[in-house]
Amino acid sequence: MRKLLAVALSTVAVLAMVPGPASAGKKGAHQHVEGTVAVPQGTQGAAGCVYRTQRALYIAFGDAINGIFGYTFQVDPRTANKKFKLEVSDGAGVDLQFYAELGSDPTADAPANVGFETPGPGGEKGTVPEGYPNAFVCLTDGANASFVYKAGKGVK
Image (cartoon, rainbow, N blue to C red; front, side, top):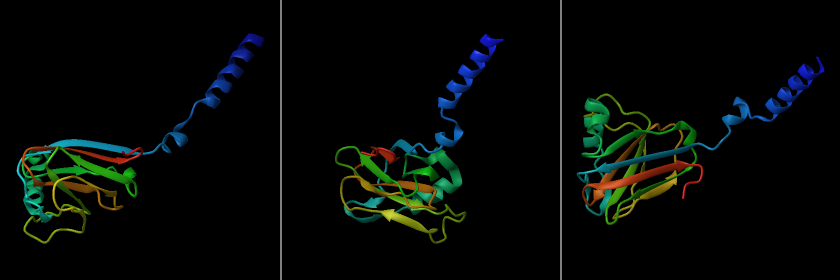
């Protein structure tokens, strides 16, 4: 009986040191997305990107259209209000737009959005806006460029 009691107490002591679900959710959220965009939709160095093409095609075809005129992905809501960085292959330029919703009519005005549109080659960086669960990557300079989006814990 003593051995059984000793084993039971040892088990309880060990389990008390193992983190449970309450502490598991406190880890910093991180999102990592990689992709390629073939055709530029920007005005080659001028401010702004034409998102309507990607938005219209994404509404109609979903993820199958990613990589041609842009790249759309769902933003991890746990990264809201956290830093992000969008890097692109050498010489290319990309912009990033966060949307509150995609909308159902691609010919209508764009839904509420927050843009990061630095003119010229290079990527973007900033803070992920809360309440904008959709993101569009748009190629402004170059062609067939690869990108990496990182948000949340440890963004470098």
